[in-house]
Structures are given as C-alpha cells and as structure tokens.
Length: 448
Image 1 (cartoon, rainbow, N blue to C red):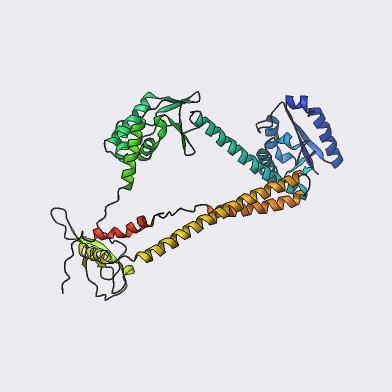
Image 2: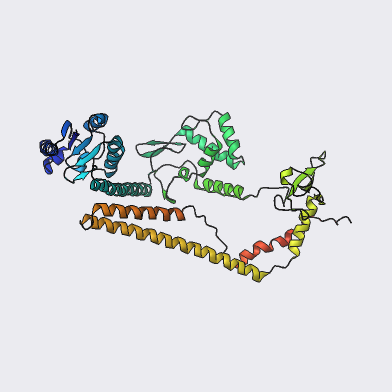
C-alpha cells in the first residue's frame, strides 16, 4: 500500500497574485491521491513561508517522519523550494536515499517512472547552472565592494583591524604588534626570530594564539595594511586607514624578494651529479681532518670504495679519492676551455621554443573545444525548453557532454609554464657564464 505525504507551501504574496492558496492546492492534491488509490498519511502545510530556503517548520517535520510514508506529493516543484539546488538535495539526498519517491502534480515529475528519473537528470543540470550563477554573482559582488574601497568581509580579518559595520577599523593594540613586526624585519630579523620575539613579549594574535612564522610572513605580505583593498589580483584604494606606509611596505617586499633569490651556499659543486669512470658508481661528497680553526678537507669518494653496499657497483674498483677543489676545478676548467657550438645551441633553442609554442596552441585548442561543448549544452537546453527533444534523450546527451568537458578541463589543469628566453643572446649567456668561473678553483697537477 502506498502512503503519501502531501506538502503545501504558500507565501502571502503568492496567494494574492498567483492563486496558490492552501485550499486550492489541498483540493487538487487530495483528488490526485484518490485517483491513484494512495492513502494520505498526513498533510504538511507551511503558510506564509518563502521558498528561497528550507528552514520551514512543516518541511522539517516532514523530513523527521520519513519512516511513515513512501511518496511525497506537491502541487508544483517550486512549492518544495525555489532553489534548484535545494530541490535536488531534498529529492536525491533525502527522499530517494530513504526509498521515498517524489511527485509534482503540475510538472508530472515522478521519480518512480523512467521519465521522472530522466527529469531528475535535467534538474541536476539546472542545479549546476544555479550554483555557477550564484558563484558568479558572489564574485561580482566582491569585485564591486573592492572597487568601492570596502574590504571583502567574512572571516580572517587582518590582524590590526576589527570588522565593524561593514568596515575595517584599526585596533590600537593589534596595530602596534603589526608595526613591531615590520620594524623587526627592517632590522634584519627573520620570520622565526620575529615570531619568537612576539611570543616572548606575550603578544597574541586576534584569535588569542601565539605568533608563528607563517603569520609573520602573511602580515609582511598583506597590502591591506597600506590602505589597499585587493581582489582577484587587482588593487583598489580602500576606505580604511592604513597602518603601514606604502614606502615601508614596498621596502619590505624588496627585502623579502632578495632573500628568496639569495642562492643557498654549498660546499660541493658536484654533489649528486658526478660518477666514477671505472665502475659507474656515484661519487660521494665527504670531509676529513677537521682542524682547530674549524676548517676541513673535502673529498669525493667512489661509493664502491666507501659507502653502503646498495650504492656500490664493483667490489674491486680501482677508483681514487679526489680532493674536492681539484676535481671541481678540473671539470670547470675543461668546460670553460671548450668552444661553444653556437649553431647547435641555436637549433636546440629553436626546437625548445617551438615545443612550448605548440604546447600553448594545444591548450588554446582544448579551451576552444570546452567553449564549444558549453554552446552545445545551451542548444540542447533550448531544444528541451521548446519541447523539441524528449527529456530522456537530452539527459543522456548532456551527461555525455559534461563528462567530456570535465576530461578536457583536467587535461589542462596543473600544466606548469616553462618559459624560455625570447632573446637567443640571453639564452646563450647562460652557457658563456662558465668561462669566468673556470679560473676560480686552483688545480694541482695529478701525481704520477
């Protein structure tokens, strides 16, 4: 026996303008149940509630009593909700999950039939469209706020400010901490040292936690402190008061950039890239004979002679121990003495550049294809709206197009750019730079 739960919703405005009165809906729905031979378990009515959300007492009561019926009946789809996302969530995530079918009288939406299940696929498409529309509207709203000088709002208010009446307002205690962080960095202290200093002083961030190095970096990198509002890579003049001058901020960014670009020093120029000519094992960089002044003698040893067995290539390798400065000097000198084959380098340069251009062109082709798929989906939706194609057919075709689109999008995701110098002379300079370095390291004559 089929037990039906009737759900009715009406707002005051709808009742006045559209004739969706409770009595009108109830009569039609009760008659439909009688015609189908269904037993009415209960009638749930939300009188005067909007359909833009699901926070309605009768609907919540219906969801709590789903063990009492096996069909939910409404007069029209938007009686359940005006949001396609909420309809899909309720039908697929609540009703069908609990083996309860859903029927809309006016649209002939019935999940117990093949046509109704196809309609659910259509509903999913519209729900996706609704999600994307909401996201787009949210982005436009945030961009408009930024252009007007307002901070984006939401959580993660920058340390040094409070978010009051839709505006950033300076917090004197926290802004003092921000200024101290900038001051310490200009004195030459790093992020770890600054975090330690702030913790020792008992300073807390706006969540009541101790400072850490990551937080220090975020504060030093945030242009909000200069009175700027940043959104989607663009900067706009904000309405809030700055804590740090733009000159100080730019100076900090310059120092941070120079520290990142500073090459890490290493004692071994050839570490991990040089091999024994006798047995083919890797040469191991090591040191010996530590002196009183702290200096050491550095060597390259064959792993077949010293080191773990898994790294060895031979049990009786005749290889030798090389002093680091001798081996490095020999290799650099030989490289610097060789004449560059400019023509060969130019060919390699042109091949690499052509490869990168082709890669970029391929991505453009894929992106164009994705746009074509979007257009095809739009055309199918138009055909459906004009009743020129059955719902069962359109659901299958749109699903196939979506799967193809997702596969194409994944093929271009994570493609890292590997730029090459547009000027061949600059490219060539990278090879010529070996020349001056060839005379830096002394080379002793090999012992005979």
